[in-house]
Amino acid sequence: MFPEILREGIWHTTSVERFEGILASGGILPEPPIPDIDRWGTANGPSHYPYVRSIGGVSVFDFSGFDQATYEEKYPNSMWRTFVPCFCKWNESIWIELDRSAIKDSFFDGKTIIERWKEELRGNILPIIEAAHIGPIPISVFRRVYKYNKHDQEFRQIQIPCIQASKGSVAPG
Image 1: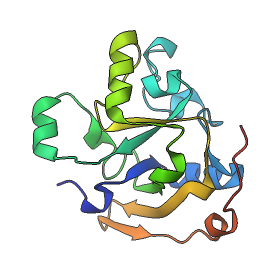
Image 2: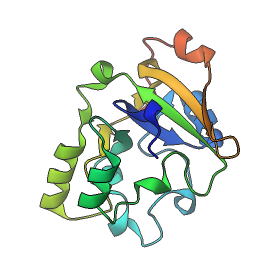
Image 3: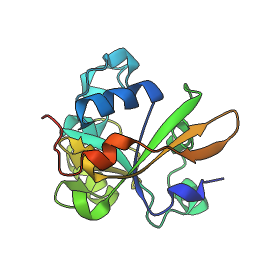
Image 4: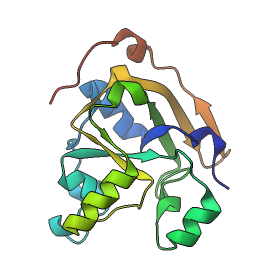
């Protein structure tokens, strides 16, 4: 069952450890200091890296209008369940909701991304629900942050003092 809390938002998901790195750097970076072996979709080399990464973006989920049954019928090979509600290799995931109006100049929705991908046919993509933010995403555009734990299967909002304190700051590029 699709988590209702994620419906209609623009979200980035990450691990608890990586979230600490996001806070330390001041935002979500398109190329964070994470070894490729620890990143999604890197096993087959650079030509198969996720499409959004190849265009200098940060992958985000846009669940606007998402209907699970319709989506799964149209895209039966999509691996969205690998990430929702928790990445399959983690016990906990962090979900960061982004302020849609604050990122509008650097945001490309899933329909735009899939059309670009069809023209270039390179890299992996989650059709329609994977969107992109080009460039770093500063903490100042974070709306809410949740931690999802597989054990109790709940989303718990976490308060991040530096999010409120950092309004107006920009992540290093």
